Length: 352
Image: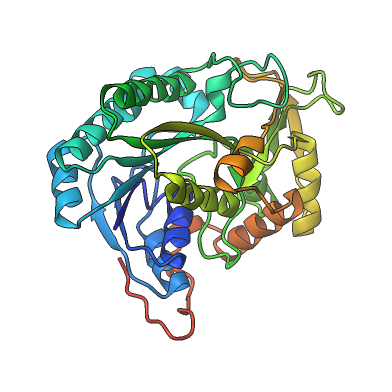
């Protein structure tokens, strides 16, 4: 049994699909602060298998410990936490409490339950302003915002944990920019309020929920003046967690980038999404945001060498899959009647 924290979220729901499709049993926990349990109902229908859902917070150490023991959990994939860079500048203490304290409580519960295998969701924001490109795992670390600093603090904490006790087996995954949705269009990114990430905002403009896209900065030293990022399909990202889990055989901590190795500008994404959707995406330029960097993309070589993983989906497919999700769920999971789904042949899924 694998416990997935933040299991009802955007990345969590796709990780649950990857685990269930691999024949693993899943217990998902989530406080639903930025997610919807409907996602897990759809996950089960997609996979034709059931999972366990428990509504709780990772800061509830006793509850998490009881879940680990009660379900015979053998490993944890830790995705729960606050994740918006801009919001972290406004509410830094909320990020330290949720992300850092939450992880402390989680690993304490794991130790008490003798579950010492962990895949941690970190972020490329720990690198800060690139000193060279592409970014490999040896690049100096220097996050420029509270969100990134919480991830770095957790990384250091987990490193110290492994040094103190050689029973721990931890994989530290540094994500680049997850986008896209499951190919069924049934599970995708459904941000609460104004999206803080690029592709959900673009999609909401394309479908008419928002008037136009705000592009933060068009005077960067890039071919079209807009920032360049490494966008990775969320399904590829989810498969990376499965690969990491399978490689956790030796004690210690392994740090791995999950990215494509390719950079796309904001305008590249806009054009690709317009092509995928057949809709125009009006935009306007605004001043740069504090803490944003001009160019950031991964060197994913170590992921291939260490765990046989690499991304396979193009920017065009990312946009096409995200548009399918947006078109089928114009108001996200808040639709009054969730999209009808059918389990795969030969299985019957139960709702969470």
